[in-house]
Image (cartoon, rainbow over all chains, first blue to last red):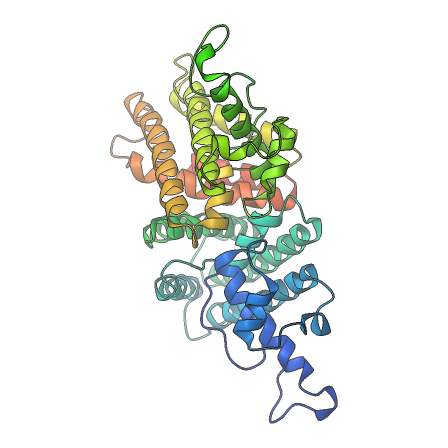
Length: 216
Length: 216
């Protein structure tokens, strides 16, 4: 959920060496714009962010934006996709870590996210939560997209809780889907409050109560 | 937390009859602008909302905005204050209702807020949560202000939980301040998700789990 330093490598495509020459680096420039968009939009929101600021941070010539995106909304969607892909990978890194017991995997994710909050001085939080809050009422496609992203994250946590059930860490009749939904509801609220307080106390309070309330 | 139809009467000042003539209705016009600002900003956010749209909805002549507010930020602060006062009054109406048992008072607030979500087609949610999410990282005074508002609401819920403790509804050693903090963390997350899903399911899921987890 928290924005970590984004990798300089492309987010989704795995390639080695130089890009194919035929696209003249177009794809890489597009990915750089998305990456810079994630950084800027997570802090400043969508409406406040000018396209020029993104181009400047990405060191891409002014005026070339529409070579990469049909519109600012199109860019916004690409930024949400980029963040969702980045974050799903990060979730999997923690939640599928077979070296740890299932509930410890979720605790590891929380601990890592706490560190991310501090590293970015409590300024970033969750891009999807931010854009959903800002645009959910006015941009119906962004609203549906954000809902789908939360749905995806929810499934990943639910599967981790299924593992916890199989390992006997939580009760055999636990409703893992509902618990996973509760996790993200509380998580988004906790990250918002942590940003306001510039403190991880809300995250700790939420996480402690979430783990304590799991049916055993 | 949800935005209900704002009263047509001024939000804080209680007056009867016409306003004193000496201010030429200035205060009432200002309050009308704030009320319209609450409605528009709750749906559209701060950066996206133009001052002209607020003046138009309030039927106040274009160009007279700076007669009432020093800046758009000044207006934003007044809107937050107006919403906070409105919402504190609403909370008190439910949470200090002596005709109901303390936990039922909190349940009544939840039921009323659910209705508000439906009434506004899941478009509004919480103005403080929205502005905090949008501006918390970039407007430090808005961030601190939003944090103080949540702190105020938290105290009101904590006192209701104190009453529940005194009435034997929750355990004598319950930490009412932490429980109240948890309530607002989960509440803000639930309202955000309800807006995305256009459904009260997240609010029901959160509220049911909150009440079920209260120490007895």
